[in-house]
Image (cartoon, rainbow, N blue to C red; front, top):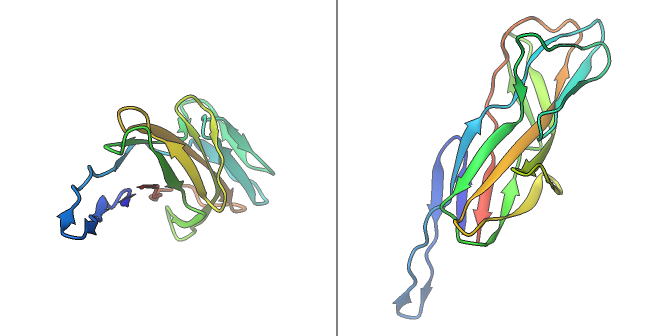
Length: 170
C-alpha cells in the first residue's frame, strides 16, 4: 500500500515477502499541489455567513458576506497525482474540517470539502473518502473545494493555512 500526504511529503512503501521470494517494490505515489484553494476578496457582515468554492471554481456566499470580483482571485485547490500503478483504482481522502485558517487572533473554519477530476466530474465522497482511477500513466488530477465560515465582523487580513490530500493505492 502506498500513502502520500501533502504537504509533508511522507511516503510509506510496504513490500511483501512470499516464502523466500521478495516481491519488487512498486513506484511511490506522489501528490503535488499545483494550485492553492483561494476564496478571493470578501467582506464579512454584521452576522456570520459562509463562502463556498466548488471544485470547478464557482464561488457563492450566504448571509451578509459580500463578495468582490474586481482584482480578486478565487479558485479550487488542484493536486496532481503521479507515479501510481497504471489504470488502478485508488482511495482519495480529503479533510473533514480544518480550523486553523488564521490571519490574526480570529481563526476561520473550512468544512464541507468536495472534489472533482480535471474534467469537472464530481468525485463521490463518503466521510471525506472517495475513489479515483489512475490513468495509463499512473496519473490523476484532483480539484478540491470547500466552505469557509466567516464570523460576524471578522478582522481584515490574508487568512492562510494548509490542507492535506491523501491518495492510497493497492
